Amino acid sequence: METVANDGKTAAIVAYITIIGTIIAYFINNDSKNPFASFHIRQALGIHITFYLLGIVVSWFDSWLISAPFYLFIIILWGYGILTAIQGERNEVPLLGRYFQNWFSTIN
Image: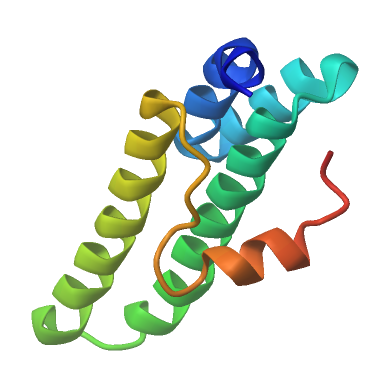
């Protein structure tokens, strides 16, 4: 299991670096289909999509009382995800990680 994590660690970390990084990580992992990298690609994709979809809703409001918790939530998800990728662990991000794994289950 540890060698699987080490083999996919680069793609897993790259996935968290912007949506472009997620796309690059997907193509890096396309041939090897490393399960560790696939797990983190699904998590990162979910975080990025959540950021853009919730960002649209938050942008309707012109209040830091709404936007600050939104950014804090995304930063916590992102930080947790990239930290677990760096540590070689497969932990789902809080609240939404389980859904990301189900919604993006076709990413292998």
